[in-house]
Length: 354
Image (cartoon, rainbow, N blue to C red; front, side, top):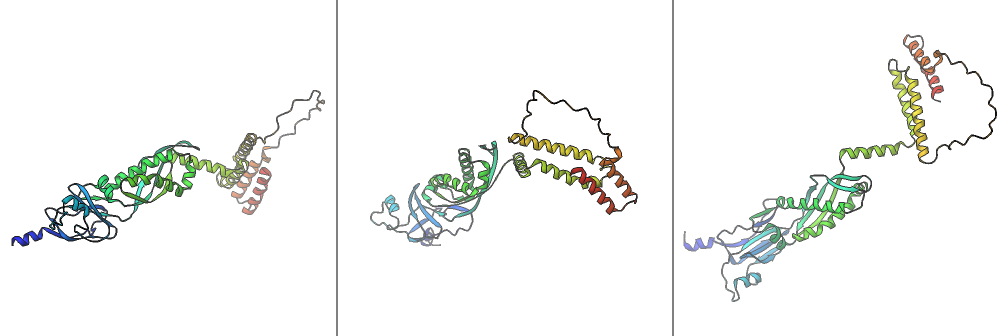
């Protein structure tokens, strides 16, 4: 091999980046001991930018297109190399390519719950996650602040830092606001816009532009979520007295299916009704709609009439529970039909619960 052919192989005529590996944001052209041919071409594709670095200093930045590398297209580099007399020769410089495509579908989340003060629930711990997108817009800043002189700088390396910035910004943004958790969870679009505004300056500092930021979910710890569900259920119940009557009526068919269940049904019904009446009375008293306080006894009360002897107690056999149990026994022995039993039971229960 001749010396001329060997020297020719050391010159680079075309510089370009095909982005063969996805997720690379910055890539240094492999110069090794090669030199760039004066008059060679630099091909920068759409969604790319190229930066020439000479002796550790950024010399020129090129956008998309094909550029001839001459003293006219490299004015800063010309000044650094003292090419004031159009000294045409190969030159040595590092060339970095940067991807300016929008990085879509990037995920963020809170690895640990964020503790906040809430207007409704006091101190709460919440988690959140979502998606965001961004792109590189200023390769000078990105090279100086982030990528540096590495052979390649990937999206995953950058996003380790970005996720920490997102979480810290979310903590300060939510912690400094007065929006209750229920309002935040119900208006995640507005919350995403607030986060985007708060993060925009940070992304700009590194030569990036935040394209979109979305909050997809905000959740509370399981125990607090159960408490909220209980509160919602209580609000749906409304009239406690009617709710108790409904619960009692629903339990009658179940009790009738159990052996001996009818015998204790009357006591359960009485207890349920008394409990429901007590709860309703308590709720009325709490809202100021309760019964009037007892008035003072009058000074002169009329003489009480002669005591009337109490009526004899009804025999136990006439008690509704006993009658129902007898009917069940007669049905089991085949003395009455199912229709007779159902009709008699309905009549007894109607008298019992009104």
